[in-house]
Image (cartoon, rainbow, N blue to C red; front, side):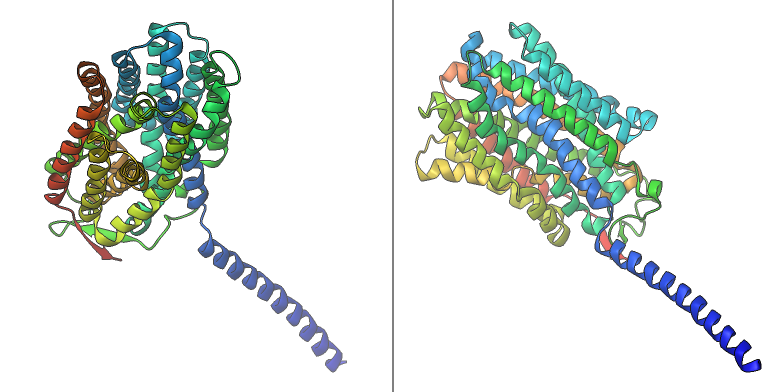
Length: 437
């Protein structure tokens, strides 16, 4: 009888042990799975789609659409530049209030609403009849672009520690590259389907952005704590004068320094992005389809730009990363500005492509390093405002210079001089040192 009772206890104990053991092993499996994959990388994937929509389609696709729109509506170079400039003006307006709007709505809601604005305004451009209506609607598109881009980049600092921040931001910004890659092939096809096919292109852009808005709504979260997680990566404290970001006052001089660097990037890259297809068609004699293929190569090469140079800045430092990228951009602008053809033209497109989205990924990581994730959106919004000033002035000034000279050579040489200045300014940048914790 005693033996039977002991046997029953042994069996029950084994079952209890087995149940606890299974539960423990299940918990270990979940922990290992969480170590292998973090929800933050889903945020990065949705962020990539967001940038694909708000910048890639909302802004950079205009370079492929301008030649057909200009021919259909009889636009001059300065009017083309004006359309782009007002888009950046709208972007600038959004940047001014993005921090306050995010505090009110949260990043997820703000991004969703901003993408809806882009979707609707892009579709309405397809119905526009003249320069005034297109300019107004494209200004609204710019507002949506700024209202989506700034909080999306801010989410990188909220979800990733400094050790992985540059890499994560790099994967987010390559969304623009995917948009360029696809628009270079698809837009010429849509444009050729019917008379004024560029209108069909705008309808398709609007529909695509709407789908992405829904995806972002379902995937994005404002911070990892919302779903019981911590930031991705081993925590790193960036120390300046013995103080981590959360305890030290904002360094206004460093923020202004970052703003100057970002201004030059905005001023120069947008000249290339806005007018390179026009240059290829009107000055080099390529067909729109061939020029679109060149533009698609920019998009293809740019897919590596953010991750490669963002990771490089994680390892070599933000200063070195910025200097390398601006040096490569200088070569790209010089080759077009000097009106070189053949291999030189291909090299220019290649140089622009491989570093196309590097600066934003480095800048968001740099700002996070300087001010901490709790201040990143506000400070990044401030320097993006200065960046927007560069985007406003760049295409308009380039368009005016092209009208006076008859080509864009001087405009691209001006861009090269500006990026040389950016190399020097970046070399003077003071960044905090990192310590693992």
